[in-house]
Image (cartoon, rainbow, N blue to C red):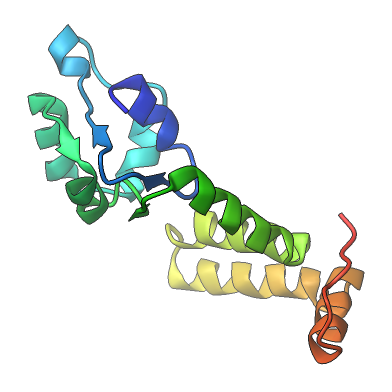
Length: 150
């Protein structure tokens, strides 16, 4: 994943890479700057000094270093298969909870403690007692697969 390919990947919530994957922010090699939203996606993953070093040098990283830097979530032998397994696990959970967790992580991590806690409370209040939340409880107590509505 070089240049734009890496920047597209950075837009994903979770990024798996194979042990043989190679990544690079290589726009400087072409006399341009990284764009396609990298100033929004990368700033929450990698320290500014490392972003400068990677962008200025345009060097190619192996998947292990990319994981250590936070560019990828994990190095796995089968990224597509692992992604599908995770997607199936998430699909078996309440879609309301999954959406709220994404909102919480995306918004609270950059907020003040007060605002983050208020967001937690607001999101939780919006889920407690809903049909999907009650179905999750009943399915867990009944040791059965939940049947959520979307």
